[in-house]
Figure 1 (cartoon, rainbow, N blue to C red):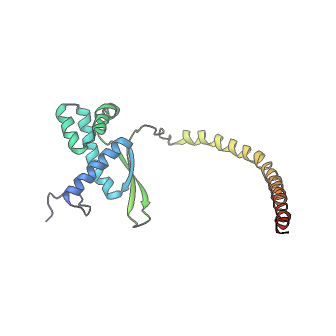
Figure 2 (cartoon, rainbow, N blue to C red):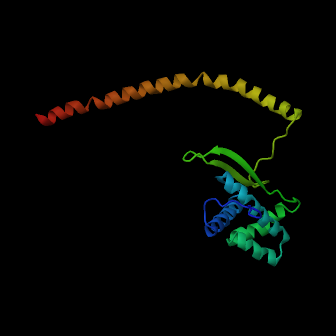
Figure 3 (cartoon, helix red, strand yellow):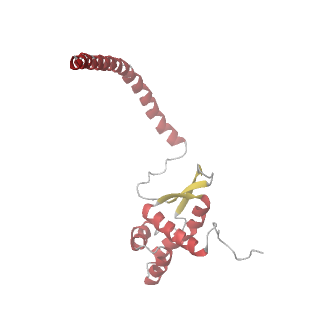
Length: 184
């Protein structure tokens, strides 16, 4: 029976697994979005969320515990600074996993794991009837603008190609008589 044996082994020794997740926690907190296998992302989610919760506590004891999960100094400073402020009102659920399909080499399922409300993240689009009405006028305006510019470009390209061909022929012709003079 496998009672109380939670967590994935991921085909690694315990020391290797511990080092792997320390590095992944640090990378995710610094970059706020990383690509990894789906199994690693699911395992990483709990460790990152625990670290951010420690950052929200803000005590010295919590900071020392966070150093166990992410030993990089800059990472812990970010957790106890900007991330603690950003997630102060959120009661958990700081990460999001997005499946991105299989990896080319070994077909392993890959996923992005990212922090929600991360910096540089565009606001979520509105869902419903109001969003559809706003999007419709923009597409109509784009359709009108594209035919006007498409008519002029092909003629210019053909003329430029013809001129280049003439220039290359002129440059190639003078070299042939010069070679004959050297032989005489």
